[in-house]
Image (cartoon, rainbow, N blue to C red):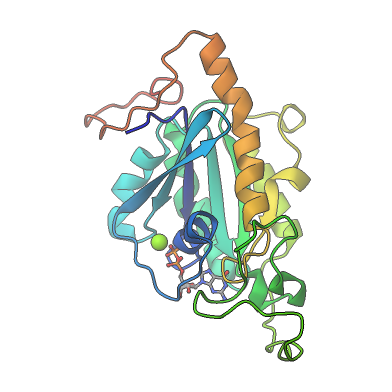
Length: 246
Ligand SMILES: Nc1nc2c(ncn2[C@@H]2O[C@H](COP(=O)(O)OP(=O)(O)O)[C@@H](O)[C@H]2O)c(=O)[nH]1
Ligand SMILES: [Mg+2]
């Protein structure tokens, strides 16, 4: 198996669409039900580097694993559902502390998923989607230009979380981490809205994050460290914090 050069972890409450986002990005598909037991791991080649992406299960019983998933992470995606305020609140209440084991220079991005439910604009995938990435469910054939016009937009739901809320959370995450806002990436580059269902902004999210972690890979390499991420389950009682683990 190829050794990852860097690690990205996906965190957020159950049902916000973490697995669907990863599935949409890697498989170019959307399925209505995919269950994640414990977690899943995906390796993406990005230029000459291998990036490991860790999907977690949001259920309480797996929380012990959450900090293990974040261990040595160079980037963490905090995912909420734009139609569910509680999923946004939980990021701070339950998930932020799990990121203590991430790298000291870990990059955070805040992602509001299910934007298709609140915004008609999110009904089309981003322009830069690869050919073959089709919106909607995997069983739907791609619409040809000569087909009937698209069906009327489904009824949109009221959004419970705004982009401003996400940007405010990003500021609080930086404060929690003890980071200076002006020394970090600005909130308008680290807050995303996506739809795993339609593909809206999914490539943009992952590819921006991959680009963001490149300096971290290069720094590790120039520091002459062993630049791989330890995939083994860490030994218990390892209490040391960021910086010790990659
Ligand atoms: N409408 C809509 N539903 C979504 C989206 N992403 C996920 N879902 C649905 O939300 C549910 C939970 O998704 P899942 O990926 O399993 O969430 P996870 O628990 O965070 O991994 C499933 O029924 C998905 O079909 C999305 O972007 N839009
Ligand atoms: Mg899941």
